[in-house]
Image (cartoon, rainbow, N blue to C red; front, top):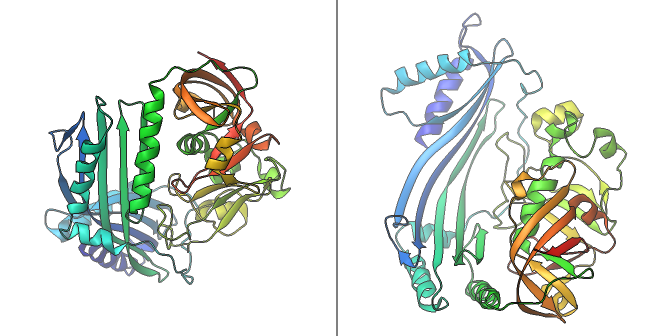
Length: 439
């Protein structure tokens, strides 16, 4: 807690400076992360090479947001100093002042509110950090022993543990522990599997993920019939996540909506316009236990809460940080953590195993090329999807290469779109009727 203590001391002193002092603060907030992480990996079937050596890292870093006595603001990233603390922080404070800017809507620090109870730490991960790391090496050994013959494997495992500190001049002082476990692997860069949560992967999850990925890899070796005009497109959960990240998350940013740069206007939200099918809802939920997108409080000091962005097809609210909430005239909302914490739901979801059996003519898309080049506001896409898996009469029968054309916003509004869930994924399989042709 050395960094947060130094920052608190510095900013409290600056807040108490004489009124005519140029470096006097009127308000501030601090976010500091303390973390320890261990990781190891595989590159081209080689564990612990110069590219993926076992490693241990620890550090403290943070960010400050300052409101000066004249109402201007500054923000900066910070780390522990390596020299004389007093001289270092004095210089930092002067540099922050020189970089100040006017933003009246941002110059607001929320008053503290009650925090929810959210599980964001797994003690088993703390034990790994403390030295009981056999589980990581056992996992790599299992990968190399059980991988498909003649395949070239890549993989990585990381376990992290630490503290999150949030302090504000309005009286919020929160410190809590949090953990993270992320693992992924792939064969020949064709298919892969991954897991990312605030807890260790369970043995049955690890086995199911491995089996599914190996099966997909084996099916990739078979050539399958071309797609036709009646072929359904099924986006894998990882593809659904990527499509949401490209076309949906940006358009629900409060900043974009207020600036008129998104697919939906402020009036559309106030009118609760129907934009998705009535069976479809979109939620930010940081209250789910041990999920990567879960937290107790935002960096701005706003307690975690469940926020409906779309309820049964109807727009509800964009996600709003403090500044945007003031401009909007509402309270701040939950915030996504990257794509973590964002959930797409369908009123009539079924299990993936059940949905697969009902697909007479389909193609399972595991990855695409060039998604980041697609225009987010329109929602339109034209994407190559090599290495997709053909489905006939409820079974995966081999590999095919396809091109997809359509509009993701229209996909979520279509009555023909269905969703299926899997215990391995937070995002659903998305079953679409969209443009598809063989490459």
